[in-house]
Image 1 (cartoon, rainbow, N blue to C red):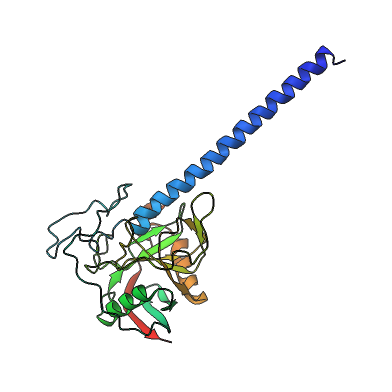
Image 2 (cartoon, helix red, strand yellow):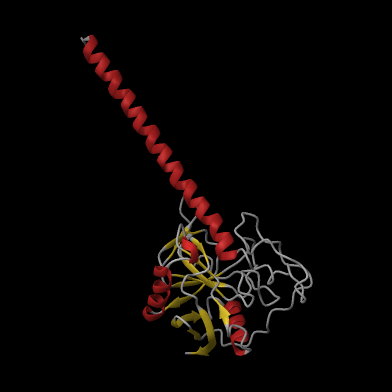
Length: 262
């Protein structure tokens, strides 16, 4: 027969276990919420700002975009008067290397045309025209996600080439987990977008530390070890003003960009 003291201890133990379960559930929900917040931030940091590429600006910059500042509101989808995507002019069976000479050091990454032909073709077309030359990597994120974003000729997250390219290779990093994300490994180069399908333009991000994001950003390149180290050094210096998201404290200007067949 269970004594009253034993019963009290049993009830106390059960109460403690219930509290522990509730705390664990709260921690799990908090972790999931933080993941969602990071993903939303990614839409802003990694994609917010493809406004020009999706027609949110006209040729005279008469229209203004809210995407240059952090916001949870996606940039508007592409307008009907966007410029056409460049005609396919690459060898889709070949690999290419994009080489960036920057004020922080040389950054190079491999691109597989077979997996991302539209992206590689667009980047080669733009690089051949000098599009990326003398542009800034305008945004560094050091909290939640770990990326350096480049490719905006305006330098504020709102610029682009005037056309969009389709999403590609979205399953290249594996199947999304229960939290709806996949791991973008350090060294990955992927397309920025507005969080809407097929809204990539010219902006891309360099992952310098493993980062969890929804599988909605085209992974199209892989940095070599030397390039990754350059980006990690920029990240180590932090964001200007000490925030977790903004212009990098170490300014990064792409002085020359080239795409060559390997």
